[in-house]
Image (cartoon, rainbow, N blue to C red; front, side, top):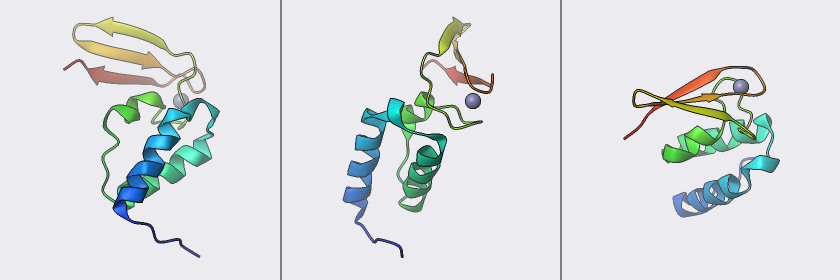
Length: 86
Ligand SMILES: [Zn+2]
């Protein structure tokens, strides 16, 4: 059964989720991504907090900055996320 919540509640849930991200599993992240998508809530900066490949939160990411790009290497699957510095 699907619980219906308001967009405001969904936003609140997502905010709380990312405050305690280090204790979350890839399964939880998948769920919150789905929630955000169904309510069309952009994750923005929060997307940088987990690996988009294996969905593990970046616990101790090795961050390198190079030519206007931030590179974060995932400790779980070795996937490298790249972000433009704004
Ligand atoms: Zn990964």
